[in-house]
Length: 247
Image 1 (tube, rainbow, N blue to C red):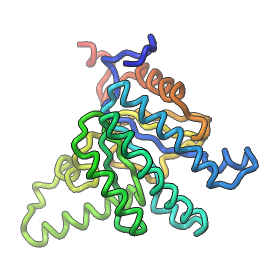
Image 2 (image 1 turned 45 degrees about the horizontal axis):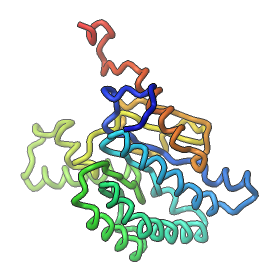
Image 3 (image 1 turned 60 degrees about the vertical axis):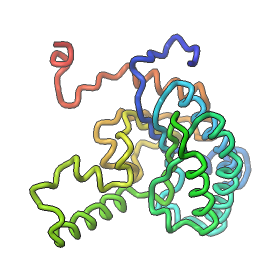
Image 4 (image 1 turned 180 degrees about the horizontal axis):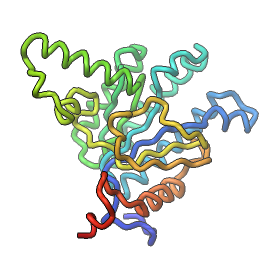
């Protein structure tokens, strides 16, 4: 348990999602190549993951690589994939030590073979852990995810394995890559950008949004705790009035 008197442990979000933005701008400010920003961003991943685990948060989803990121220069993509493999291999023992389970969502088969294999090995090696679940969104796009779900549902309906009358929100949830993961209650975006960038569009329908000017490599334990404290000041009404929540 973290000793921070601001934290109300009865009002913690079960699932926090983060759009990790600003690595490139951070590197530019340092006069370095963009990949240096990504390398320094790994420290923030580690710090936020450990903080979330200490708080007792159950799920932390990190937007690590979008489908749109494939359009970046090949040099940067290659460096990112290499960094991803190195990080996964290096951090797996720490994940096990801290009882953290690794999962991944997205079009994972589009990843380079070595990256895909190392990712699956780490997922398998941490599968028995029952503390925090760390979810990496890799080659992920919410539009891709929704379209894939629609295709699968349409095929099941065509083959008469599913009736149109059975299609509802709960069923649709079960066709998404996040089917076994609760929807995020808090979405954090770093770097001062105010957009969602095609991330978990279905799942964040009722998430609280937290935007910060801090660039991702500078987003540390204190920044994460500030976001949690801000979340705990929000009134989550889900369409109801404040009076209804009190009564």
